[in-house]
Image (cartoon, rainbow, N blue to C red; front, side, top):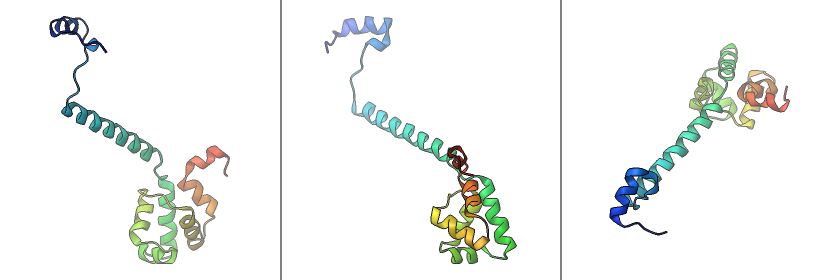
Length: 129
């Protein structure tokens, strides 16, 4: 690309600043990389919010667990996870794997399909009932 002499650059910059390309400095390059990372993190956070568990799932787990008289620790031991994971599921901060979903359904005497639809409401878009 042809580079304008400095005297012309000032005139062109006054008319249309987008026509004059500023030289890339290490600081500018670093700033561009950081901005790209921030944009990527924002996109991931946006998709994470869209994929959050339906609160109905956590409430169902909590109510059924209490109905059976299990503590979070006892239920966790029965299904093979840590008690903190059960707490995360109940609070909607985590989504269960398919295997965990089936084990929870078995221990809490709930249809696995019902739990799956509560945990992943998007399944209704695919005709799952």
